[in-house]
Image (cartoon, rainbow, N blue to C red; front, side, top):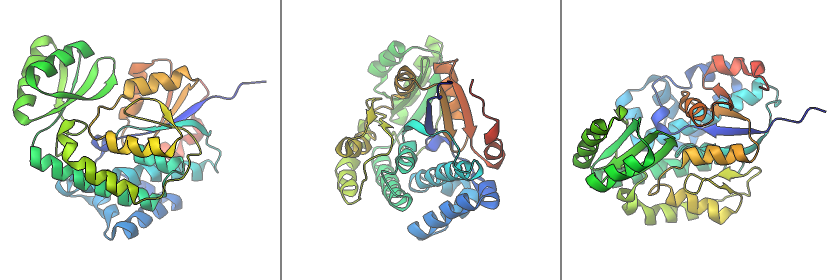
Length: 314
């Protein structure tokens, strides 16, 4: 008897966004159309038009891009289920990269799509306010190990925001500290030093002003027991307890995303195949760098949804 593969669904963060995302899904798949229509109705404006047409300046605003990535990611998931006639392998874990956690919560039936859209839009608004108050941004770098980045942080005042792969990290800080950190990192041999398209120093202590209000906002929503464990960004551990999940949503805005450890922990628990649901293919590439033997399947648009039957068991 062939042993069933163990699958995880993973959902990207806001840096994966682009104008036009989700449009072909909306055109070709009823289930995806229903997702965008529901989110539009919930938020009271055409977020779908912003996803499909832009402009980029409006889409990249934190309060817009976070629900936009959520809607596109859930649309990818629902379209894949539609095409496979609900025959997509069921996950044993779901996980999201920062903002992607909210799509993971929808996939695990912890939050309804409408509640997730309302909550993540308010999260984005609060984070944007904190970012405007403190200033600063985020920069992705590769080519150095974590100890080098910790040394850079101590020297310049930046914080590690994402631990994405063995040699890929993102830092948060003031613009002055980021400039110093970029120069020091390049001297040390860093590669691909890329500022992210975000409006503040997220996943760092700079978001502390948003914590209390986000906690109050989270308490207003109904959370259901997950149908599948949700892997946390902060601890990289699978969560099923509702209070722990709520605390994860609050603390993740001031703590680094432990993506590398999250993937390693899922693999240690038997996961061999990852389905990335959402715009872009950032997570699939990171997973291959973390574990070259892992199988990944990217579902990001109508073409990749249509190819869902082509995935192989390795």
